[in-house]
Amino acid sequence: MARYVSQWNWSDFSQEWSQTAAINELNDAVGAERRARRRDLESVHSAIGKGLKEVDSRVEAVADQVGLLLTWTDLRFRLLELDENHARREIRSAFRALAEGRPARLPDLPDLPGYWLPPAAAAILPLLLRGRPGANAKAPATGLTTGLDAARGRDAVRAELFNLAVGRCFGQAVLVDAAFLRLIHDPADLGECDSGLIANGWRALWEHAALGAFGPPALVQLTGRLRELFDPEKVDEAETAEWDRAIAGFGAAEGKTPTVAESSSALRAHLAAEPAHVDLAGLERADGRWRRYLEELIEEPSPAEYPIVDEMDSLGLDDGPDRSRPSWAEPSGTPAALLRRDLFDPEAPVALRRLALDLTAPLLRARLEHAHANLAAPEPTVIAVRRRGETIDVTASGHAADALTGAEERIGRGFSTGGPSKPLFTTIAAGLGALALGLAAFGQWALAVVAALAVLIPVLVYRGDKTKARKETEKRDERLADFRAALFAARADADTADKEHAAAHRADRTALERLLAALPAPAGATE
Image (cartoon, rainbow, N blue to C red):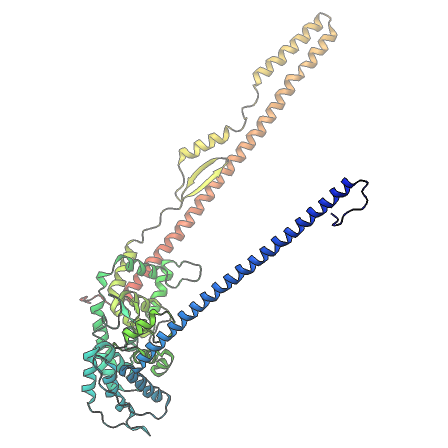
């Protein structure tokens, strides 16, 4: 609408009305403008308020983070001020220098009550530093035996595992032999492993002893300890089922289930493999478990540090010392599961396999005998022959006679083989012929000819019906012959299948018996 007063009005009233309308329009425009500015001002005030709130929130978050960081820093400094932490750093530096071939010095380690690492390190480091250039390996205040006994008194498992790891990493047989003898009889308490499970550290001890890393006496000690841990007659149902699956599926190709003969033959060859030479030095370099365990033992916080470490963990900053369970204390498996793995794993060293077979032979024999006893003779092969809804079960010995008779009758009912009645058609033809003769005798030649020609009708109908019946009979006979041929072929196929199944059954039994004969003789058996 135009915002001016029109001058083209013919009366004063019209002029006044036009001015009033223009004034009202202007007032409306001014009011709308004021409302728009008021809304804009309110939006600005709201945005400023939100911004101030966000700034306050961020400031509070930053303040919280700063407070959290200050708390963490304070805890960190408290941790660093502990004598236990300082001792761990000194021990870590000495062992790293030794591992890297750098000059190392013997740290001055105070005796810290309740902490096993300082006395163990103070007793062992002089032995490692002896004869190294630049080392200050003076005799310790306490002897090797005294220091190790003090460490064992505070934490026997960690102290012995430390001795063994140091001995393996730095070639100190005197440490290895003593630690092995103690650890081999204390697997249940090795670390914080769950009840009934073997810890990774003890599993490493097990594997290396089986491979000859600790000498023949160690293998004898290990075998005796494992006999205490594993009773083949007390294996639970779940583990027994795992053994059955391992036996049945041994040597299986991808996507294929082996026969009993295949799995038994493959397992017999697997168990008969001769042990190869084991490069213990190469195994140690490739394995690296003892070095990792040694690092974990040194880096693990001391009992005095645990409260501070737990408080640092509660802050959730994902920093600071690791409070989780060390890898050497993680469970590796039950004795039965580990022995099963060693026995059936094609990649496992033969020495471990031999040890597993020595310990599990009674269980393996029991499961194989169970499989042999349940190896039932195959059932006769049954082949179903179906023809147009008719089914007969056929075996190598044949089929039920009444079933064949009933099937043939039902097949025959589907065909019209009866044929026309010859006496009936003969009678009709004779009657028509007599009628033709009678008409001729009375001089009705036209009708006589028609009657004579009519004689051909029953003759033609008879011949047509007879031909149709013959064709139906031929079809029925072909159908029955095909059915009998199928029965004969099915009987031959069933006989062939029975022979194949019998041969496979004999092969399964023979392979199982050979495998059983190849196992170590049961305890107490005589020749």
